[in-house]
Image 1 (spheres, rainbow, N blue to C red):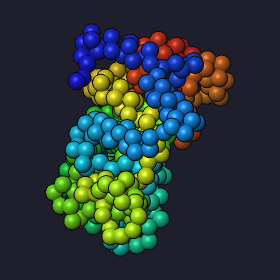
Image 2 (image 1 turned 180 degrees about the vertical axis):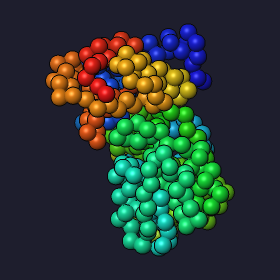
Image 3 (image 1 turned 60 degrees about the vertical axis):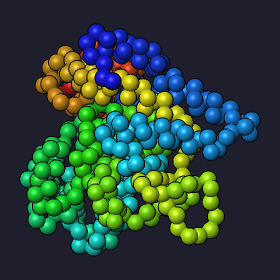
Image 4 (image 1 turned 90 degrees about the horizontal axis):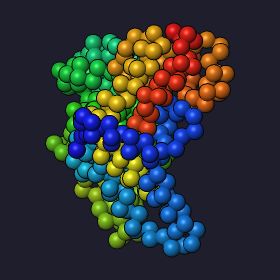
Length: 359
């Protein structure tokens, strides 16, 4: 359920009570903050580890819950979602599945975890184009278009509708990295051949969670990539036969699961539940509203991203330290990112501190 109206505001006030940042945290594009429910779940699991009382098969439950919650957030069936520890693992899987000679079209300056798996795969031709012209650059020889939905460096948003339509016209497949999008930007993973997402940013997961979606697999399972990372957790019943042949992979996307980093997934499930309960549409409105409130106060043009990127003068590093503003420098520019635990006072205080120092 997506909160709206006054109830939505009350929901965000309650949600902010789940977090306890020091200073003004505007760095979700680097890592998200854990809600109290995540900290409690991980603390309990660590105590079980310390005392030797952990129920290891019981750790499957948070993986299953996380899979289902993520599937709901991006609009696919849970059976089309695989889990691992890093997004690049899944991108590498896709890259390794492509036949030699495939042209992969990417965006100039995209995050290296999107680019490196294709550049490292022998036999592929990787071509780059400006993000804004990516759809126009798709040609008859393009086999795959791989791009981050939201650019890590500066928050620019890819025109996913245009990319999907242009790729469809020439029969190209699409791989979309949702790491900087899932959790605040409404996206339908079913529109693309594959999506990959690291969970530790806008989804507020501990580091060590990632998701792959394969919506096309429901139409043509025979075209699924070879499960090159297949281990015991990729089996149909992982705990019921962990030795010996024959191969007995899961019938659905779980065949691509990587054995989970248990404590990361224990923390992921309550974080994803919070994001789901607030609703992506409401979070999008909230985050974008704060980012544009900050932009307006600093004399910057309005944007469509929760990530603000700006050139800064030499005084900014000292201001950030003095005001305890959590931010990042990326591609030579200041990057601020507003999320559900921020409010108008964060935007206003940051703008008061930084106004006149940005361009």
